[in-house]
Length: 223
Image (cartoon, rainbow, N blue to C red; front, side):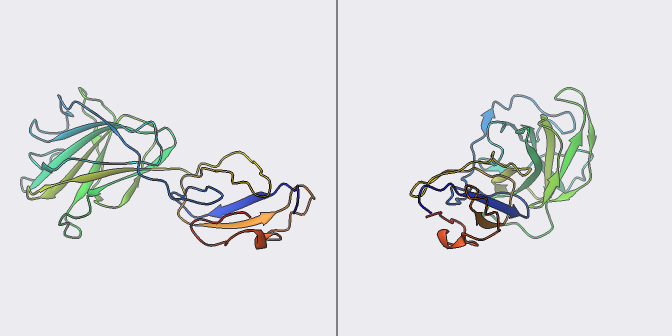
């Protein structure tokens, strides 16, 4: 394989993976938290509001400080209390997920969130259906989007807001023996990786797998 360029082909399912040619799972991105001096019009004035700008990283999660759910949104029942979000997403995001952060009690099936269609911080929109907390929901565009999470009771906990990008692939690239080329790939859950030798025209899938440290691990390396 001296002086030969080698390309990698990748297939997968969904969500996120970071490939270093060496594949590494990316760390959570950081959201910019803006002052919460207002409230979305679908919610009562006592509902905690988080205004977030997550537009810089498509594969990021924001965790709130500990907060007590209060008041109602979207015509919710009196035994449900809410927290709300006004979030600008990355333009390549396809799904979001809201739930109670790890380490806090979260009885299965008791928390839900709603995505509000239309409106802004002054004009009301239309509250969507209940989406189970901790599950994903499709969303379109960077927004900003209005969302409200509700659950019976008012225990003080942290919440996470996760954005999930659509599959984003880098342009074709190549490297030489002894080098490592970082390739960032977003929007995937699992991958399979197969090597080909493009410099000789041998495009048989897997023909050069012996030069990979593995084909089904989290961090395959080309040698």
